[in-house]
Length: 251
Image 1 (cartoon, rainbow, N blue to C red):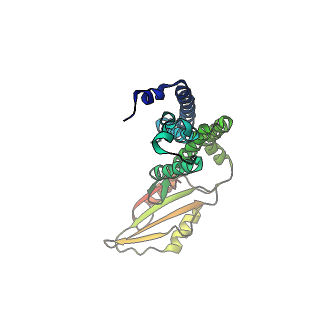
Image 2: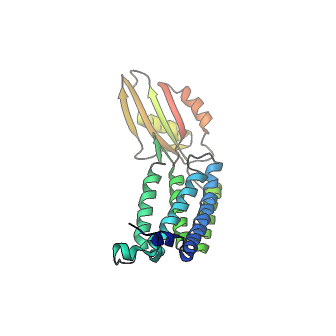
Image 3: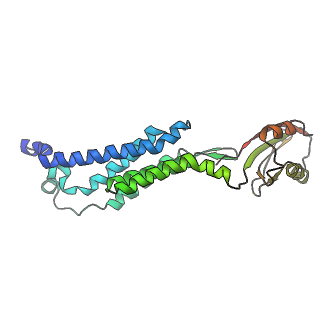
């Protein structure tokens, strides 16, 4: 049974000073996480400032406590548990990275041929790294990583649009009953509109006497490539097509 003296040792001057130092680290990590997550909130993502702030703050807390083993249990750990080896902070970091990996996996969604959430998952992982850097006292590196992460999420998309690229679209075509579609003809129609079918993206399903083809088409000629609205109008009048679905192949 702990004595009153042992209980009061949790409020000694040295314990309070260490707790204050940990508190300041946690608050700093929270501010960094909120800054990194604001871009996600601004764009209406499910994981926003609260998620990033919590991840960054918790990562910092789990990292910094490993640096003060002599203050664990108000310095009574040696008397209660005997001698111990100094903790290895890298094992704490390994556990943080593993846990954030599971959290990031839940943010990645696959809808047909389109995948979304990869950027949010990667930036959340970076947020945990910011917290770790704050926890070990690398303040300048944590600030730099925060600025780089936020800048990358805010302006990298604009830079991508300025650079040469080959955007892709995902298509799903359902043909009328009895129609036997021809892939060569479909590829020719696709090329006429500035796109080509991406290799390895073709899937075929046959249900209730109807063929359903799903594939990704990549733009190869920007001048000839039609926008989605005009492609939809063309598909609506394409012979043998009963229904279709078209959208950007997000990743």
